[in-house]
Length: 191
Image (cartoon, rainbow, N blue to C red; front, side, top):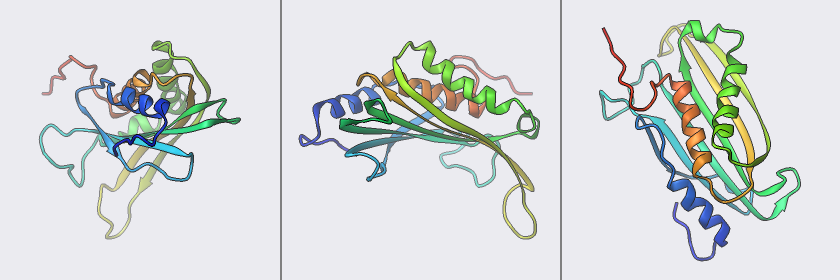
């Protein structure tokens, strides 16, 4: 999505800041279609963990993870937002069975987000969301692994200013954690 001169300057500045963010090298960011009716102005980026062995995403793989981060802008503000710039995040990641069975997984996943935002000292308001861990069992002729486990994190918060690069970077950090990526600059050794 491209911006136009008809868009308010704070909204354009927020988009430019989002696009200047640096995330884990195994995460690919790109613009996606934003929702149209949640605010007068919206912009969205999609994030996906790249698969190093292929140019495409395999039909069945372990460790698939993706997300989206949506910027909502209302120049008049929104009382529930306590501001004019609202960020809405969604992350989904496949998990292994042992991690999915951990009863503390939702608390840990939520702490990833809180810690990532706090470590960047970015002022924000009205942080809220949910963490859901699911397990699915497939029967009959349905394709896919017999058992699958996923983590979903949904969150939203209000940015106090248009300097959104640290917010995008925090989002990328949480996606990297959820995907089980090693820290940037660390090489994972495989047997």
